[in-house]
Figure 1 (cartoon, rainbow, N blue to C red):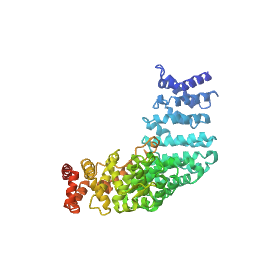
Figure 2: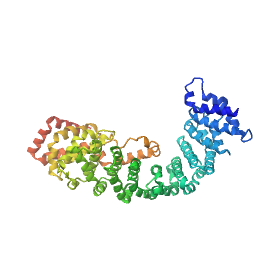
Figure 3: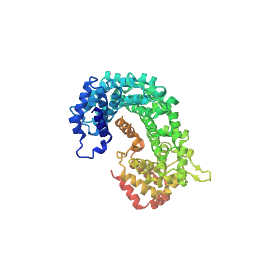
Figure 4: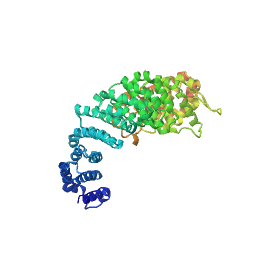
Length: 552
């Protein structure tokens, strides 16, 4: 009879998706009327009943995992507690089946957080014991994986754990890490995930208490060739701790020396750029003073080597650097040859070379150049012209031409208006008086119709005087980031807002800036040249500009 029931439950589990389509099949009802009571009896009976009953215990728990979506978690038979109790049973096969079942049930506990909290402490101890009792590395990894998931769900559902429970979780981890050698090396990945889950649960006020354990593990993950498989998990853990830090910490900052080597593997570009961007915003001048060379190495490894999607993330770092430190950041990028790379890419696009970067990349380079030149226009003479191997010249006129021709493209995306304002400020800087280059003065005036009517008018119409409607540059998250962005996402947004408020170019009143330029223009150009300028841009354009500059 027991074998017959085992066959029935096996068939029901294997065909669970198929059976759902039949109106007469309701696993919820079946669990309440038969499966739940039977499992309760079997768990309570221990080994006092027929020696064949362990088969049914395992099979019913497996059946529950197959029908997790339909299991009534809040049932009076409390399937979660039954499974948790099974973790401490002397039948190791039953315990491993319970691990699988709990893993599938946890996502359905959102409406019953108290049930989850009630089994957490006992489950943690049982999972560590089961890890020790198992021999197969896959089984041990499953136990530690469930432990990490359990901690994560406690946090997601707004729960907390006592210090005693947290100590129970954390205390075994260094030993597991040290003993994870040879075939057990994969368990280090589980250790990193558990620490990340604990840090997320305890939050910013206590996450730093984990540094003595976590930071050496991170350093070892990046420093040993045998741990190369840990890099992705280690990077995620690094970002978690970084976003949960209450201030720039020297110990956490010291890890950044690993970034230069990590940046050579283009597989990790996205998360490494998120980490670097956060360091720059969070650590400020202290971080830049400590790690300027590493930042240069990281960016040199990536600019021109990654695809456009990857370059969008690299631009997060460049924008964070130049937004807060345009002069120092510009010098840093110039010294390592990146400004030259930006210009060479722009030149190739201007000449329409077959292998040139697409416009969306060129917009990012031109924006970086705009920030650099706005802090130091005299750099123009050091960076231009760019001459191709065939003798083509990309000089000041060609650079101005690109800012005009790509202006509409720069407006793409939520941050587009910010980019366009930066470009407009730079173009207005080229209008006399501009002592840097007579060539660029003259060329800007020759294109004044397009610049004044197409660009300046647009900015005056669409950008608030204080820049309050400008959005900072950001990159939309893709699927592979979804499991890491929740931790500290609100802190990241707050930090981004704070640094953006200090962006001198974004908050600059363009109306006042342009007005001062136009007021000086008659004296700078002289009567005849000024009249020629007015004739070029047209009376209607000038009247529109005066109206926009005179309005609020």
